[in-house]
Image (tube, rainbow over all chains, first blue to last red; front, side, top):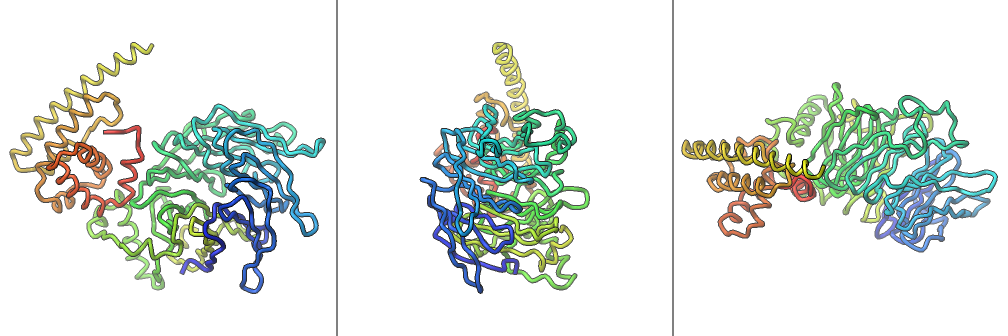
Length: 378
Length: 135
């Protein structure tokens, strides 16, 4: 079984984030508060309540090295929380938005964070030592609709965004005095702050959940039309692949390796996508299915069966493809999954564990280690 | 500038209409040979979702409708219809349902049931969520 831990924290969870050592989880129970739980002797105990926002908290990110929490909310504000003694102390970040903030992510070096908003803008926030103040710099007039997702490239400069105008864009976020020249690489080396590197126009409906692969070579995002998009060579001439699948749309994605992506969304069960040897991405299977894969003989048959589900990929598979009505509703999540977070071990570039949270108020931890048919993609 | 663009669009529309007329003749001859599935494939091929010209869309809908109503055995339709036609067929099924015409809706619902079994809910989502490539 791929799910190793299930816990009901609230009626509904809008977002969650893990502490650097994964012993604590910060989550928003669909309210203006952020609750921090710590696991002690197999029981989750609420240790802190972060109370400063006036409206639903839409994004939380916990930085891995500096142990800081950033939260954004529909009240258009953002707070950076620092732990001082036993308390979490908030610092207000003035985002200068006139609509709700929707998502947030720390940059890989944790000296900046990006906020997507309903005001068609992206805020890049950084700390100014002299003023003891977080400054927000805006990327404006680039998006035609709400920004639903932000993702940092490992180089700390490039930022990918998805928007409800259906487009995925990549920007340079080089800030003088914060970023150094040598951290700039490749084609982005002469881009100024806010310069658009590429605009990907693949989806005809809302786009969500953008992520970079661990190396930063591949970009994945999803559309609200049950499609997932994979883009290689992000730059002047990107190589794009569209994968249509037969189930409900996704909300968020996560790269667990260069060749495997987990997608979560309205189908309540995580979907596995993987690239074969020639780099062609396809849907492999649902992760929540109760299937045992032990012998290598089974492995083969299971493999072709899973490929048959991807219509458009193999014709002979479609012939015996039957609907399994009990599959989705008997799953581990009972409602739409809207967030997925990696649980990366220190010094390990591969993600074998991750957590999902959704509208059913559960956080589920998944482990890919005992999934033999997937190990070839890890 | 806007004038030339409109002109190009109109010119393009004429070409599309001519192509649909040609398609229509081919479909009639396929139906005479009792090949309704081939006729439906021909009707769906080269549908003009990119143009905004309503005349083209209506003209193509008429030929798709003609071929669709000739389908008697829905099960055998899906044993020979390739998955690449699923998304575009779903769009035309919803166009058929929007007409409110009794026999058309009956036929569309019959095909819709089988198509959803085949192509899943994702196919419905793709036809409903796409506001750019309409049929």
